[in-house]
Length: 267
Image 1 (cartoon, rainbow, N blue to C red):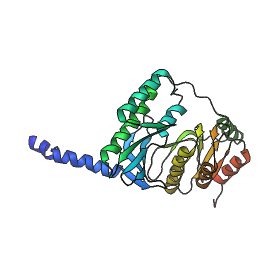
Image 2 (image 1 turned 120 degrees about the vertical axis):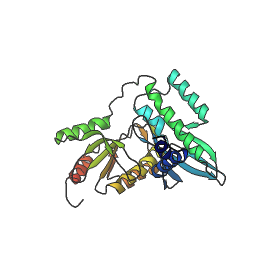
Image 3 (image 1 turned 30 degrees about the horizontal axis):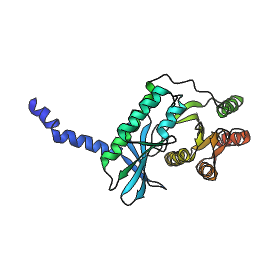
Image 4 (image 1 turned 30 degrees about the vertical axis):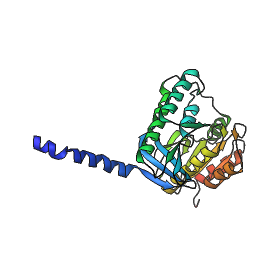
């Protein structure tokens, strides 16, 4: 028995097992600005951690979450400006030597790339994401875009899945606000982010491209409130280029049109 345990639990076998898992789970893909990596770490809500690497000079790069971590806390109702939350956030930023620009967490690292830099940055994001459990979030106000979509689905006697989960080729477990099963399923995201939208839309641009590769029949929708966000030509063009439906909440005819497309042949 002892010989068998040694045979299957030697240090070499254990190390090779973990190394093999990491080789299978760490994914990387080229983007317009650098490289995006999906890592075998999870946020508290089950979303996979992604980091973006962007070259600065020949000897340095920026590693960033493109605002995803803090935006998710904000969308879930956590007051990031509350005294205790802010103190805990500042403590983590100092510990991991992070910079914050708006919602974006980032750090300058040296090239050639060291794996430890990617790992520590990813762990810092998970640590910050767990602030959601420190204090009771405030109640999230339902947006006018949410109300509009719910009313349209109700009028058409449709019951989409709320907070549905879809998969991409690389990223798994992507959460959308509404998922409507159909011949051409409709996944719809309500934009609740406030302020500048470039980082958010680049993230979702990559994500929508990823899910379309996984399911070519999928229709992708984003509904926004132009009074709540800061849109410019670049961010609007990203949405229009990757979505089948991309419009402000009051353009209801466009929403009806894409729902019709979901149930038609030859889409």
